[in-house]
Image (tube, rainbow, N blue to C red; front, top):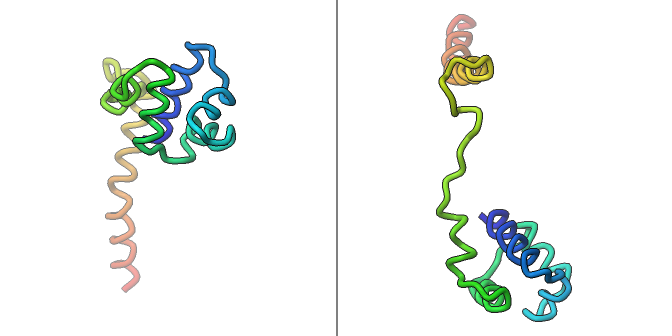
Length: 110
C-alpha cells in the first residue's frame, strides 16, 4: 500500500516538475524522509497526505485512487494455451499437493 501511494505521489510531483527537496521543505520534513515516503519505506499519515495533495493541487482521493485499482496479473491473462500458462498451472498443482506428499512420506516411515 505504501509503495502504491509513494509511486502515485512521485508521478504527480514529477508532473508538476517539483523536486523532492521542494516538496520536503513545503510539508516540513527532511528530504530523506520525503524520499522514504515516495519509495514506500515510511507510512504516510493523513496529515502529510493532505499537505502533499494541497501542494500538488490535487485531492487526497486523486492520490489514493491507486488503492482502489486492482492490478492485473499478466501471466494469468490470455487464452490459457500458452506454455507459460501451463508452467504456472503445473507449479500451482505441485504446491497444492506438496502437503499431501509430505504426509504420505511420514506415514510410510512409521
